[in-house]
Image (cartoon, rainbow, N blue to C red; front, side, top):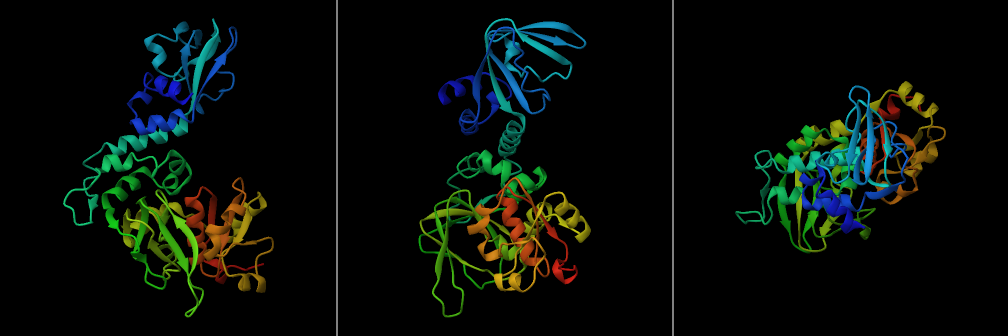
Length: 361
């Protein structure tokens, strides 16, 4: 089905203009639907805005508020565009058995936006390769079109889904590409945070020691498309883990100043206590980002304890359909926790000022 869908995608607009990688990705996310004669193929798409619907085979009669009725054939040039792109369309009926293709409009818009950004060589000219080679082994266009690193899933619910498009463009202008070798320490636990990293190629190991003389424990493995280093930048604390290259690879990094300006500020929403309480009344859930000992001593009624140092391991226990309000004493740990959760598609806000300026009861 993927091959058949890809063949179709190469014939319809504006999808035919997508890069090959994006079309292959989209082909796995859409499907052809058969509709019987006499049925309205838009019956499941009442709002029009949710899906783009294309006629692939057969004949449709389209009724418009201003221009009367129009016959649309699947093999005709007009069928290269969505059936429902005209706001004056009020009804449709299948004159024969037909086949249609439905594509989520939001997903398509994200792909088109990313692809158009990736063809702007001038905007991306400052992305440099820092491994010692004068020329990068991949151009910025090839890099941005690498769907293993920037899949549509990551663009829909990851870090970039919360950032204005203008900021994304600026971020790639300011990023540096660096090469790594197996065994290289990228960040050291206890060091001052300086960069935010995205993994372009290779894998890395994340380890943490819970005390000065304690042995380091492996807590995570990172792969292409993963990000790290944000906790120290968001919270203004020192690095809470060591990240070591497991294999040779390449990273993209953004310095702290640019990270705060382009990613942290637009991604994090801070709310007053009264606004937080209103969200809780509407079904949101309190998250306490402090250590279990702090949580056990005193916490907001109904709060779930999700310590910052355990958020990556425990976020799978959270309900993605719920909204969350995260807090700590000052807002530092809660901001770092919220940033990680937002990157992973959760709806989270931060209690402004933390519990030091807000009653904990």
